[in-house]
Length: 207
Length: 202
Image (cartoon, rainbow over all chains, first blue to last red; front, side):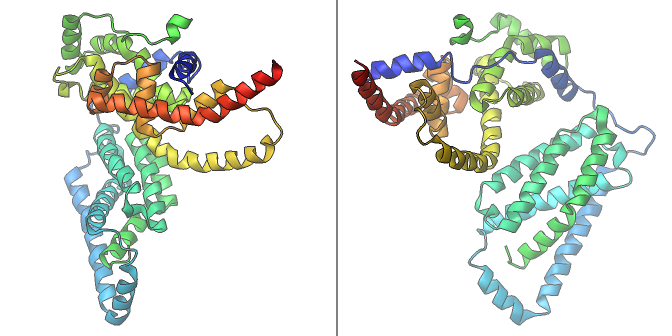
């Protein structure tokens, strides 16, 4: 094909390739304004403000207990563990990915556990959403990495991605409703227990 | 109509100085200033999002995400490049990231669609060259497709594309060159068919 013919076709395609319709300017602006300029207020004024550090420490502590519990339970059957570890070495993700996955899963569990705490109605929606947005980026990177080679881990990461996307889109005006829906979804998909199991298994070398 | 659809310069009408003032005010939380910046850039951002994703609702969502990010990170804009370039860079990044995410899911649908169409296409007329070209553009590797769409269809210069994508100007040129070569290759069989048909008709 000659260049001038392609130029003609491309000239034509300018008017026909994915021609954008008019944007919903006002609707988009309202959403942008609500999300980007909303005052950083608490969604539940009648409740005590959640101490994020405290909630985080609690969740982290439960995660650590889970990890050590898993390590302990694997250490009582050394022969079986060694055989399993040798087998799993083939499918193990590279250690840097494993470390990152473990860290991202841990942080996500902390965030989700805090959202489910009794004081969660007073969470700072924007702070939570920012944190979820950052985790979401990491989860997406992991999904495109060898960390997601294991089908079980991939499913967990996909579920986590969906959940974090919902958390990231939480809006102060609908804080409590969003929170209820998210917590229901998290409970329904058993995300936190699955994260704990995954972290324990990673520590034991199953991933 | 044609004028609207053809490559147009950024829609911002504010002067450089005005825009800097608006940026500073919007960074402090002034919604009126933010709205002015939004009005100046929303159409172009939406066009970029739509050209990348090809879906009106998704383009609206992406446009929203872009401006949320822009206003949240406004204090990070250092003025090294034009504000429009910075906004377009955010638009491209947000759109491409979103498309990478949905690509995996869409691939399954595409596979099913293709299987279905292959079964039913036999004996039907070939789609015209324009459709083939659109399909060929969609099938280009992401880097080449984005460079081609932004340069040839949206009218950005290679320098602007380089700034937006964080690549060298020459890389942008090379990607467009690569895209054109791939398009020529993809369309060549259909051009032969077309010539044969024309000869037969003559």
